[in-house]
Length: 92
Image (cartoon, rainbow, N blue to C red; front, side, top):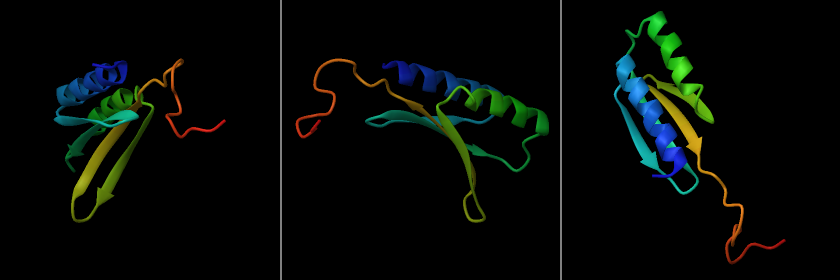
């Protein structure tokens, strides 16, 4: 598992420990973590959640009246330092 996956798994585990079961998804350039946030989450738990997602490269909260609240966090994958970084069509 890439380092981003390990970091994302740690974030997901910590969110689950706070009571927010999280799901992870691998993408080409990052690993994402999402968790549904209940309306009843206490202020103390919110503090813990913010500490957890602060470990990510980016995070946010998507709130809609139809689907509730979804917390998301993204951990970027490292960019290769050698080799064909830009791919076959990359021009300098």
